[in-house]
Length: 59
Image (cartoon, rainbow, N blue to C red):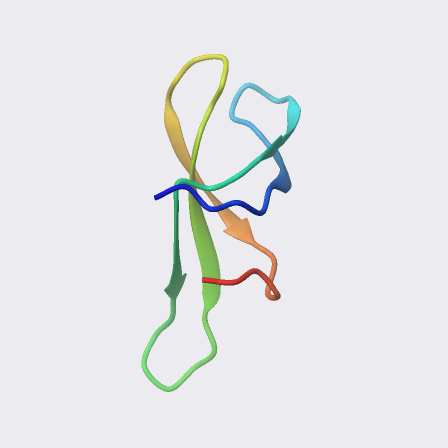
């Protein structure tokens, strides 16, 4: 399930790209506010990587 909202991120190749995450989830320890993580696919190499999403991103 690919999300529709694209996010401007830096790919592992070092380039700035605007990509939509293929998967998004919240990563949080018990009792604390967590961060939102997205799984992206690098358009050049085809490798998958994770990157932090903005706090207002819908998960």
